[in-house]
Length: 233
Ligand SMILES: [Zn+2]
Image (cartoon, rainbow, N blue to C red; front, side):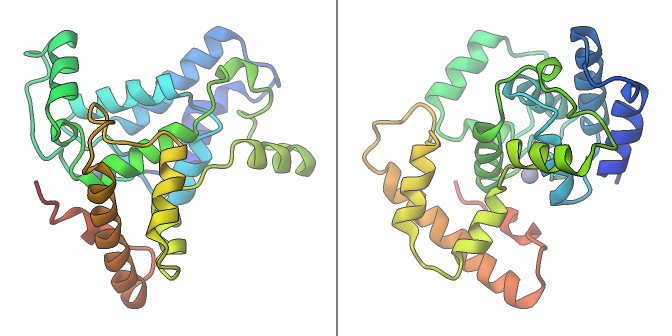
């Protein structure tokens, strides 16, 4: 199973563009394609890698990445090496059908992700990505920034992963505030935004994941694989 770490993205995708601080539109496009290329049939080596990538990708690039990973029969979430729960023939489905299914099938996410947990992780990541075009993000592609610039970039494009949030909240037992926070970020169940059971469903999911995080944390920190195994439908 191939994994990609920060060094690989720096060597392969960013390496050729270290001579100048300002990327052209074309160069930014090449970098985006290289990142998708690297991740469409591998996964991030660690959480730090996925967090690092936030400085280089936009929500649009992320959507392209999801599509490419699905074409390769991979769960959309870039930390994952599993298949989506439900495989579909990518060529048999047009955009309108896809959209219809997404809006009308409450389990449509399972054709993109291995589990509801990774659907949520992915949503949580995507809503935090900056819309700013890559060529406009001066210096983010440089491997050796000055300490001051590095600090600024780290802060500006800092992203929290859903896994980190759960690990933090696992001890707090404050699910209602967690749900309120997620809602504020625009995270919901897609089509059924008006659905009355929505909050209850989210609450049940979160209780389950938090309980599992607690168990895993006590057992072996940082391995969250078990969370994706038994997703109910
Ligand atoms: Zn997954």
